[in-house]
Image (cartoon, rainbow, N blue to C red; front, top):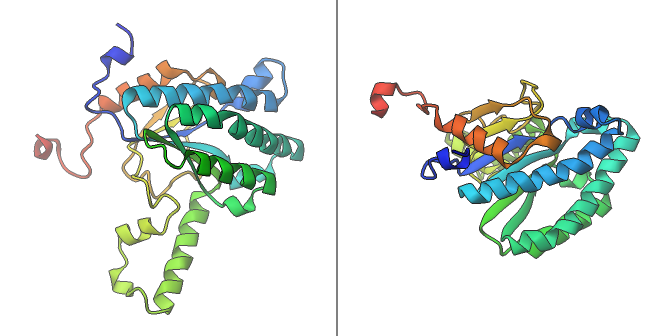
Length: 246
């Protein structure tokens, strides 16, 4: 029996988030430069997206570039930006064919102009698609996102538009870059690392975590199916007891 056939399609996550890690290490194992791993990793994005479509997942968020990634060697960062522009331009037709809506979260203003132009074009070209949302986290940092939300709430309070005693979880969530999307039920990280790396810290408060040793360029549909099976084996209590759930 294959992995997919074991999955209960009535109990799949609506939103899966992935920290795509291991491109550089994969490339070094092949005797190649790190950027080669990033380019091969594009195929794993397609694998994950196809797997999510088969499962009926509505939102797939991928951690593509963090604010900390600017600290990497300049040649790698420049190569990543160029790869991003080329990849998005090349994928728009397939995204439309598969009814994928492309959106981003993060500080897009901090990206090179060529990237921003390609991102705007891809968003516009796919804005009517509604089978699945592909959410790319670019120049993203959860601490930046939460800090930015606090600043904007403070401005509204100072202007008298928000009463401080009315600030709650729902209001804070509405000021985040993910305001239009549900929180992910499942977070996957590849490459064997066991940390969150400043990703969706507010949104993953009740997410299930799945860590795999598979390096991102080797991540296939079956690996995502295994993560969902792992997710389905757990009891999601949200602070309640098992007896309360049954």
